[in-house]
Image 1 (cartoon, rainbow, N blue to C red):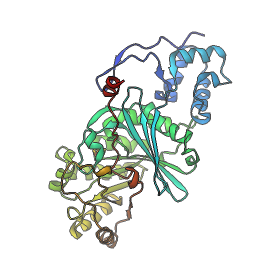
Image 2 (cartoon, rainbow, N blue to C red):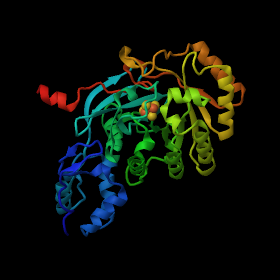
Image 3 (cartoon, rainbow, N blue to C red):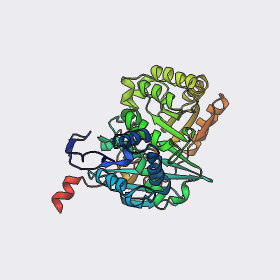
Image 4 (cartoon, rainbow, N blue to C red):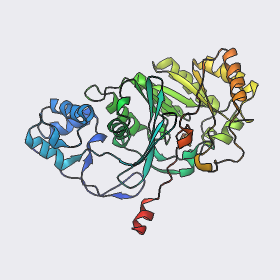
Length: 377
Ligand code: SF4
């Protein structure tokens, strides 16, 4: 056989820095990518499925443990690829069972991943970017600004790390949601490739129906997601453009009307579930009129409505806008009751993991930047 090609060389990364890693991350490859690589090296296509099985089912960390591959192929794979897992920089467990990982990436940046228990089921909240550029004022990730997009392998590796550590009992009944750091539709290619890897039956074999992608409502991204058969959650948070623009600057580009048209199209063309997410802010977007209008939007698009009482930033940090407050339980119940009365399918998402900064809207890595750490060393 021939070998699997030359080692890589220095190349610009999406964040503008230069990476001189001389091996590629195998976790970035879909089964089709890997099959093509093996074809080029005159290896049989079925080897790709074997490698996927070792990587995602057996979850071995090195090629030399892939016992049914010929030695020459194992050596060739080792010279060209690595199975790159993030470094667990911190792990915390909430009193309510929610678990949070701070994961260090190869370039020194870090992300957070959260595992949320829900009865016998578990939900893993995956990040798609380091930080976020969208600036939603109720979201702690926005305070990090955008640093860079994650690669497909960096997305998939979050799950592998959880399954290898204290979350290893979570594999059965696990749902995956792209609701961690970042806006998935702003990193759509990598998210799409990650979903293909996660759903490949030679590996992890997740049903697309157990995957939900959350978005602020970018119509082109919503159209792409409709083709993938995954669930879609659209972060609405207001029923009028003026308030939505104050809460979510993206509304200047994609108005509520545009988002609702895209949502309806998603419902008509996809088998995936549609949810409207509504972060409830005390005294700001929690009026009865708003509940009635939101219920109408939900009915019209055949979308379930998730009400999420605002979680202030962890550690007493300031949100991006002053004056945001968590609604009282009475306000939450009153809002949900109007939604239900108006015919919406409504669920109130009570905070999980707020004591460890893992609740919805609280993710933000407060770790030193790589340059700072290097200077101090
Ligand atoms: S809510 Fe999502 S899109 Fe908005 S700033 Fe936070 S991570 Fe970004």
